[in-house]
Amino acid sequence: ILLIDFINAEREAGVDRWHAIINSGSARLRPIILTTATTVAGMLPLVFSSDPSSQAWRPLAVSFTFGLLFATLLTLFIIPVVYSMVDSFFGKFKLTRFAEHSKFTDVVTAEEEK
Image (tube, rainbow, N blue to C red; front, side, top):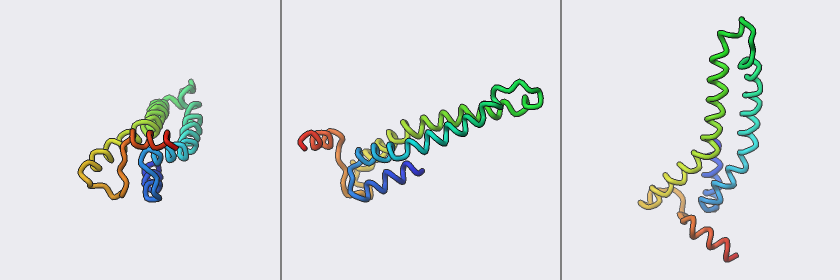
């Protein structure tokens, strides 16, 4: 949610879609990685514990750990791609709230000309 909010805020400020996605990804990378790392590190003792009293909680810790790692990968890689695809689809029909709708090749050639 915060990643999409960062992208939309950048676009409302006049940044094109591609730079908004890259800027928001780099701005949210550290908080996402730190949150995942600390939570996974906190669950690892329970995952690797051999104590009989913790065996009932072990499946929860394992599923929580791998679920969080998978969600992190989704957040960093899949969500920006899906955002771009949905924006391209709605941009073709002029159903987007943003004034500028530029293609990636147009943005790259404009950057090269600068």
